[in-house]
Image 1 (tube, rainbow, N blue to C red):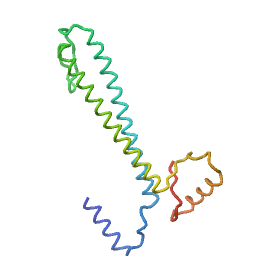
Image 2 (image 1 turned 180 degrees about the vertical axis):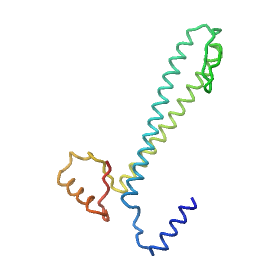
Image 3 (image 1 turned 60 degrees about the horizontal axis):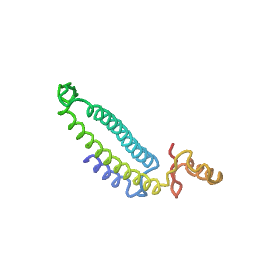
Length: 161
């Protein structure tokens, strides 16, 4: 944090107020890619937890049909422990509920990240490769020549692959 504040202090003192227009195209793309990766990671985690819920459901259904005094084994923190079905079943149901709540929380965070990404795309006029191909070819050719022409000073925007 201290290094960041000293860097910004050095920029303003050495450049004399030169480039105050905002982040460069490379910084915009890097931030956008980082935000997209965060959203992908959330989706991956949610999918993994969904699989855990399916496994929990399968085990719970199986154990409900078994005698409650029967021995069963459970993996707890990497250690296999011996318990009875009546001890394990409530714990499994509780774990399933907790995982469900966690998935709901992750989905809420993903929606917020999606809104943040959309706002960021609109703010910096970011277009993805292959997006808007159905629109006029002349417009896409003009916008690609603007974005390839060096700096995007006016409303030129950024093309992200």
